[in-house]
Image 1 (tube, rainbow, N blue to C red):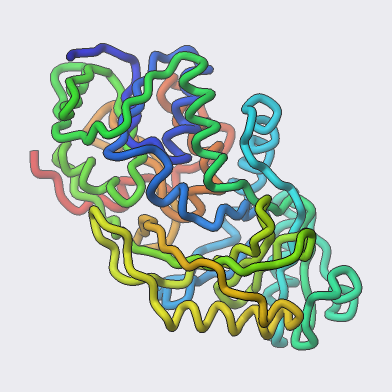
Image 2: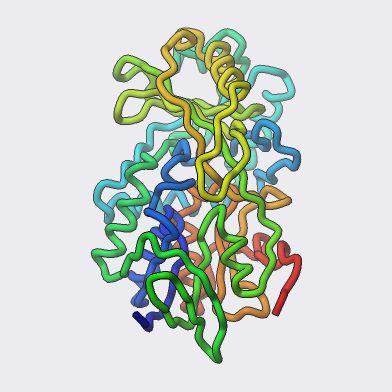
Length: 382
């Protein structure tokens, strides 16, 4: 089989799905290829938070801190786009419940106040509360909490719904989706790319690599070595009565998130490390990450501290040396774009919108030049 399209999107996770939808709505003929089944890797296993207010700068065990202030304009833009998609994509699983960011030390309180100033400058509404005010608003919060910020725009999207809903909509509007079609070759011939797979060949002037943990191997097929490292994170769920927790709770100084999903389970995230990433198998869980995450619940939300642990699972992500996102066209390989890294779930609508703009020669609304993939190029082999 040989197909000619305008754009080949490699990766059918939430970023690939959002990108395919944005491109299709802009008039492009799009083929989406995925190595396995869509939404079975990072996008479907994440905690699914929408990080609109600034969060902690480090996952547990993370060395380099995220420059959270630099990301706020992107968070404001993606927040608007999530609302737009919720109006046009059935079954997205979006829940704008609002969220608290809590602090337990004087240093963390100063961090809350600083980030509140940054958020206000970026046009993101947050409010600083004392510990007592926060407990009055959410009585579940424990006595160790000295202050909190509240952001009504925070929330989450159900990971098992959001990506598939976007992909279904892209297909309904004209994109072709090809699961279990791993890419084995990527070569530039004149003005077009030839994308070789086990299920045929696609010819297109533009290829978009949004393969998450497999972004670097895809770029390597085109002769570009990118300094990207896949890693695995760990999530947990706890039993709870319905409507126990109707907001998102996170910690400004630690990797921590908790909210209650549509099934009634409390979902714990925060970037706790799992075992080693494996290319074709799920990473094992780590007992120390489970212990650490559960201890946070007992401390921050004492009333939930003895809720039964229902499930532990792991999921892959891709990281950059500076822990910042990556998006843009690769220099020297015209028509080859990449996007991913930090906050990929939150940024999926924005990355799709920006990639569509770049492909069609339109200047994006948000400046993403600082996140160019060219800062990560280590080697070109041909």
